[in-house]
Length: 308
Image (tube, rainbow, N blue to C red; front, side):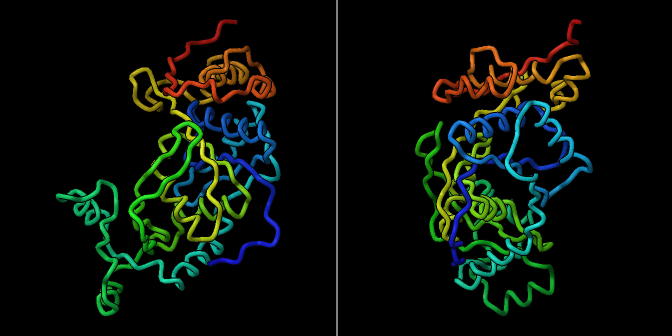
């Protein structure tokens, strides 16, 4: 396993958006929660752009500007995940040397068909390529490049979440490196959090099922499991996850209707259960009490044009 650094970074929380578009109110709410958790507990707060997947030109810069408009701050420069691809691949080589990975040649269609079969686990990889012989692997390499998967030795793992309590979820042979050689999200996020001292992970509760597999992987790499706090999502008026179909849902769109960043910040704070008036990020910290937050999703009703 990797050699642990002699000195570990100071504890930190983080917000880690993917620059695939503008942040909507649900993203901004998670950012506010992550910032508040870190600042209220004396941790550093990091902003990490997770740009290994689809990237929309200019999105990262707009994301950063929106967070600043709300009064959020962070320690150090904005970080970009894509600068550490060699580190991620080094961690995979370490796992491979320990016999904890294997090549997978399955297509998405094949994986979906196997998981949909009787007794298949929806969404979980069924282990089709786990025990291929060297001859079989050599033959398959001539047909398509392989992904690299983790050879997990447990079907499930338990983590503790601030809101959900003890949560046990599935662990499967997750992809570590995609067929194009790009490190996968589950690997990169675990390595980055450990390397950057992130011991507090605050994010949307749609990602709660991924926490057990990520915590399990962290243990295999010799890292401590972070504290988790998965925040309920923001829904649109129809009850579905907030999206563009719900009208003006980004900070820029609401500003075009005449609403200020302070108005947006006030809504975000109220949606978390902060009942006191909020005009600045400092006001959020003054009334910080996650134990009083609603455990139900917040519902956003479209705003009209602000009255002058």
